[in-house]
Image (cartoon, rainbow, N blue to C red; front, side):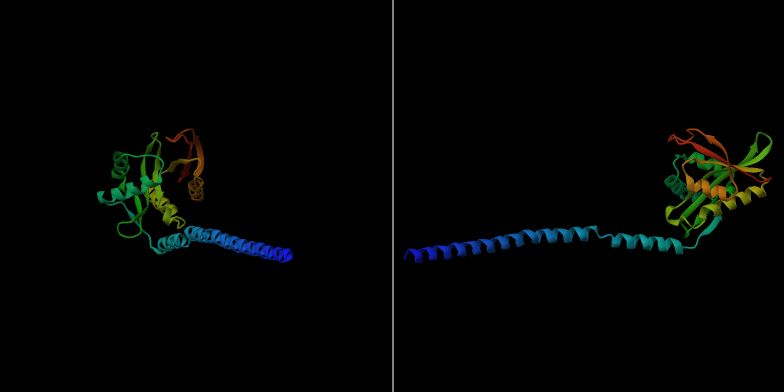
Length: 217
């Protein structure tokens, strides 16, 4: 009888252990499920496919849009030029600075247009007598919309400005650009400009400038 009771107790203990194991397995499954759902939600949130598709679409549109180069013609184009240059250049200019250059030398201001009202590039220059000796052209501002770069818009604008200066008997062309702006330095050097002088702390942000010069005669 004692043996029978011991056998019954042993069976009860085995039953309790099996029940405990089953409960433990159920608890583990219930704990793992939220983690799986959490990882899934993280993957879905981090999926950059839509953003990449939007960027590619924007780049494709920019690449396919034809660019028209026009000379400055009237005051209605002033806001287009200002909006582009203020977004791109580090130096703040007042409306009077734009008017000084553009009103006095409108033939040396050119716009790159991607559509009727979409100015994606602009160059602003002047031409006057330097030290009563040489007729010096000066490139004051050059800006290209970031979505339309790598299409030679900047170099085309510079070429058009230089051609206009040559027609006005310019002897040389100069400009300044940030010493750290390697794309700009490369653009001008590819067009024949050479580094003439380093201007220390030239800009308001404390960055040095490199003065570049192109001799036309």
